[in-house]
Image (cartoon, rainbow, N blue to C red):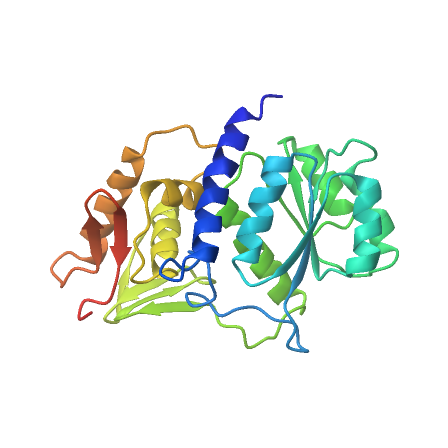
Length: 272
């Protein structure tokens, strides 16, 4: 399988992350300010184990989950996954079904023997219904099929850990910027109390903008987070969906979505 596209993407994503981590004026784009940080009931950071034999994808997932404020470890195969799980004691596992030594179903069986009820999100390149059923029947809590958006994995993990009681029940799901609110569970969006109907992609784009208020987001960053991690389209898809959002969010009101020529887009309160 050719993963050159994945490797190019991780290089770009990694460069962004490294810059954000070392530049005081360029904070990480995925920090806890936009969404309440999930924590364990004892107040410690959530621990997630990522198991995938594709180095570029494993690194990309690790970066994204660390931006959520979580502690993350990774493993490239089933044997090391079982060993790391015993040492790390994760609160959730992102688990690829196809591994070089034994498959994810066997990893799950061995881990669950020691950590009963551990939430598991399966990653699979297979889209056949029987493969999905096999994973869920084996005890997996949810699955995503490759190629997927990184944002989808993050949100599935949030939902899994809230549902299974891993995190504090008080962790909120509503993001607010000015008079604009977005509920991540009900997927309702309101501005000044008036409900706004969005498509699934419009919702994901708005969520990303709202979780990073007042921060200029480049087209590349938006593509990486909202669309598939190996999305091969052009950046003008971002311009198109920004225009859709403006028609629904800003029409007849003080604008909240602004273009920074040559840099990207920023969302901020109308009075800010």
